[in-house]
Length: 163
Length: 152
View (cartoon, each protein chain N blue to C red):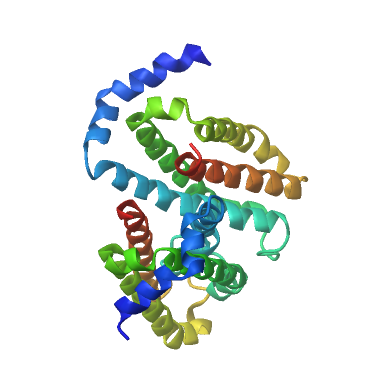
């Protein structure tokens, strides 16, 4: 079964049609997805600012991350759930959208960046957590995260224009 | 209300409004900046509010946290106001009859008034109230903003 036929199947399910044609449910999910940016990417930006040495510099990087992480992860869980539902309602259009494909690629890139960061320089955080300016590798991870997530927001918004 | 309608017409037919309306990519690009700024404005508002509520950064004094995050909060607010106004000029007459837009403006001016006249005083001693009101106001502005497209 190809990806295309899976997307066709999703789009033709009763739940997809109901979601797509709903008066309130779709706008509620969409609005939650947009305002959920605050809890997910919004807090991630604050964490990235610490990494690039542009915000909360006087607090240990480990404390900044520890305080933000639970809220941020809850935010990303909301984004994933609502995003999945939005995809479910427009699977075929999403499949054919170059912006949706770009968004998925960027999401994977963001994930890879986060994993690489957590497996490398994050593990040695006790050596640099009190520095006002974290080491180059941490700053790079922070900048990459900021740029990739800006791209994800841009791709997501543009995708909706073409629907 | 009718007294301000000429202002909406003037914005709508201004050089700025027509340029944005007639361009294929200006509106989406400005809206994207609006969305980037929203992420930072609401994100920093959340951190500051959660601190005032005592559930985030309990070890850090609020003034210290504020001195670090308030510049980002205020700059993103400035970007939101500028990009928001630009988006508005491109469809000002349409906005005039839009109930969600009217609600958004009432909420926005209330939020701005609260932010600059009341919030700074409230954070000393009435932190939880300041956090609650500011969260409700700013997220309501966002909610009404999203509703402009959905409800009209």
